[in-house]
Length: 566
Image 1 (cartoon, rainbow, N blue to C red):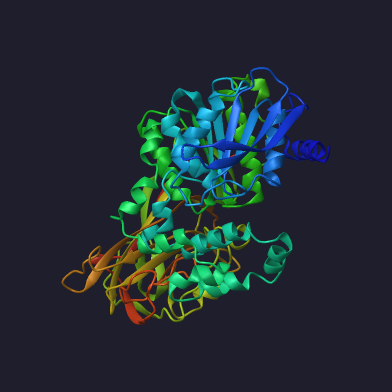
Image 2 (cartoon, rainbow, N blue to C red):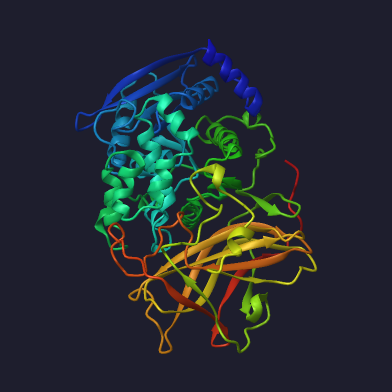
């Protein structure tokens, strides 16, 4: 009774389509045995509706709490809902090894579905983050039975997000390790650790060598964390069976993608979108003002996902579409792409494709901290000293934990001597940037091993500096051999964005040697990622003369103001 009441309240608050039935039978803890005999614990929510299609959700985060509510909400709207714990989690047998067994376990679960009397012959998938990885693991092998996918803040290939810019996404990975391990400890002990501010995790993020960080954070050695520290090179065979990028073009199901401008997987998810478009598909893409765990993202994903499943899995008419809401406004003939344009006059924009047509504008770095569109002029370099023993801290941006992610005032970090900034004049008119953003930075360094972090900020009339997007690249002699004068040209892809800078605001570019603990600090020695303990400080010069025109390339659009109607 309590779960039914909670589902009714949630549906009203979220403004979901009306329930098609309130009669849902629930069977918990079913043992679905896969090919090697391992039982995967599975819950089945069965609506009292003949011929209802099936939604499969495979997750390493447990089947209780929010998943129970989700199962009932979907079942009441006309779907058999199968929620399964990945092996090694929440009662399922075996050991959890990220990405290793998901393809086979997913296909074996599909084979189990085929043997159920209630299975109608077609299914869809739904889920966020790791729940999306497992969707792509299954997609190519499921054939025509997979009728719809809803992939939320996720991607087919996690390797490039784990080693963003060939660095290591320390905060994301270690926080996830701690989150998974926390599911095995008593509830009261977990609440006490959260109340204390997770001091063990904070200590682990600051610790060297990284090979000991998992034990400091969780009390145990985590095998996959150790493997990820060892197998970090692009050529590592380890990742070839753990990424599912080849499945994207082969998948036949219509795909809906939901992400946020400050999500950790956004660049990889947009890569998946581009592959689908190149294969002639028409995926749905929604990108909002969200981080990986924003409450608004959860609401939008459920609304958007229900609409997609209704259309492509259940084949329902437009009358069953999700009602317009503040976060997402699908319509019977919804545009393929819907993005939220942040900044001045923020609102939603419908687009025929991503990225939209834009004019590339280069904002060059100039002497005296000036940022301008005019070409570089003869000048002496600016310089700073980066010390990995006191690494430049990361503030906001794409992080796993929503409370620390997103836009923040950067003035505290910009005041540090190891952060260089260049600022434009106050804008005479609004400037809209929509699409991929990239920088080209010419660096001369005392050390051959270094990182280059670039961030674009919006400086308001009060002088507050709000991060819009950023990126980091790890420089090694083999990847970036220096020129005759010792200079290295470093292309830095930043996170894509959709942002409107207000008149009177200024653009600002930061350049520094790291963003810790979001990215593992670069020790400056070339030592292996997991065992490095020696830290070398060094001076870096940022050149901005005509032969070394460091700058930021922005996609400028001229389509007018966003649609603020939701």
